[in-house]
Image 1 (cartoon, rainbow, N blue to C red):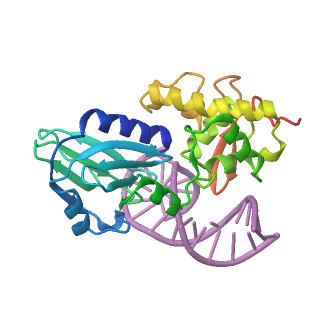
Image 2: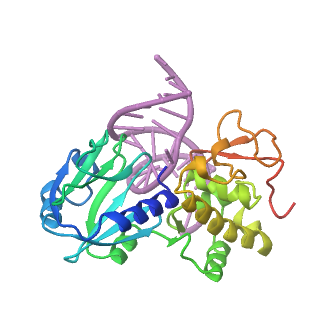
Image 3: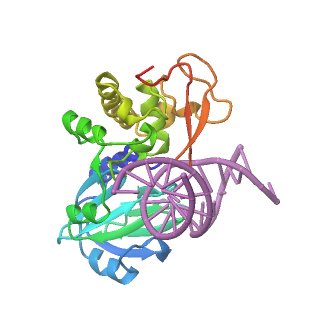
Length: 264
DNA sequence: CTAGATGTTAAGGT
DNA sequence: CACCTTAACATCTA
C-alpha cells in the first residue's frame, strides 16, 4: 500500500541496511518503469557508486548517490521494495534489481508496472518539475492552515491532491478523516478552526501510529478504520455500517454516524 | 466473466 | 480559472 507511511518504512529500512555498499550490478527487468532514463543510463550512474542517504517527500523515495545524483522511486499502486541476502530468492514481479558487491540485493517489485524509477540532479528540481506540494508531515501548523484557506472543493479530494499536500492517498485520507471525525465530502472552506486543527493533528497522529506499526495494518491501533474498509465493513467505534462514496474516481469509506462536517 | 484495487496523468466537462 | 470525473496504464484477485 505505498502511501507516505509505507514509503517512510522503506526509507527507514534502507537507512538501516542498504547504505554505504558498493553497487556492482543493475538489472532492469521491465523498462516500462523507467522515466527519463534508460537501463544503460541507470547502470552507468549506479555501478561502482554507493547509496549515501535516503529521504522521503510525499510518496516518493529519494536515494542519494555518493557521486551527486539521486535515484528517485515511486511505487504506484502495488510496488514494494525489498533488501535481501544472497540466500533469498528474488521477489516475484521484480522490475529493478540492484546488486551489491557483498552479495546482497535490493529489488523493486511491481506487479502492475505502475512504479516509476528515475534519476534527478536534486530533490528540489524533481519536486518542482512534478509540482509536488509540501510533504504532509513536514508542514508547520500555520502553513497547513494557510494551504487549507486557499483550497476549494471537498476535503478528501484536497488531502489526496499531491499538488497541494504530498503523501496522502486513498486509504490514508479515509483514515485521517475518520480520526478527525470529518466526512470526506465536507468542503474545506467550511471547516472551522477547530476542525482544521483536528485534521492537522489527525495527519500527524495517523502517520506516527502507522509508521510505528511498520505500516502493517495488522499491527495498527484497534481504532483504525483501515482494516474495516470495504463492503460490509463496520465502524470500529460505533459498530455501524460504513458508507461508500466515490470521490476523485476512488472508493472512499466513512462512518455516517461518527463523521460530520463542522458546520452542522 | 466482471469489477475493483493502495497512483498518476491527460483529457473532457461544468 | 478552478474544480470534477473519466479513462488509460498492466495485472491480479474476489
